[in-house]
Length: 219
Image 1 (cartoon, rainbow, N blue to C red):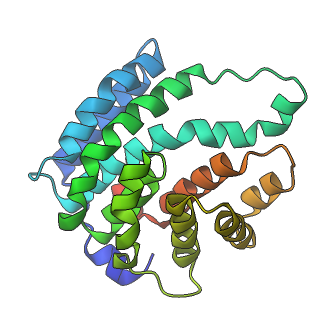
Image 2 (tube, rainbow, N blue to C red):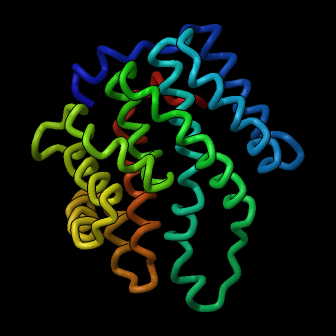
Image 3 (cartoon, rainbow, N blue to C red):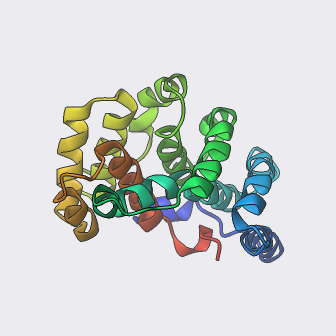
């Protein structure tokens, strides 16, 4: 991540960061993890909409929500070959997480105008999971996010644009470009069973995750 991107991200203060981390860990360690996470997602989204949070804290929460939204697609892409051979993959709990996170996306988009570039980057990835109306609202603003030509982030934003435009040809081109430096994605794309839209959304979320500073990633 470049210095300009880092400078505008404040690490959540000690107390705030500890509270947010405890909140997420509490959900993950409930007897039924998916049920706990599903219950906590609306609360996390409500906190993310609060103007009282620092840019770093809000980006942390958006990043957690992106994880909930993208985990299903990532698992689907990873298990495509096994599923094609008749293997059973239990994804119902991930579907519940994805659906609950996606339901919150339209209410998060109005944050765009007052957000840091890092938070906007996460919002773009979230928008690819949301309804078409949400995608159409964000698509004209992709250029607001700094992304020097030839960088991984520029490749990721090309993929985001293709997903928001629902342009399958552009999506395939962007996926192939990212696969030149992402070996895990390259391996997935070698399989004819890998569903491209799911692989693309998961790849974009992974790009965002790699590009965010450790300071905003909750344990």
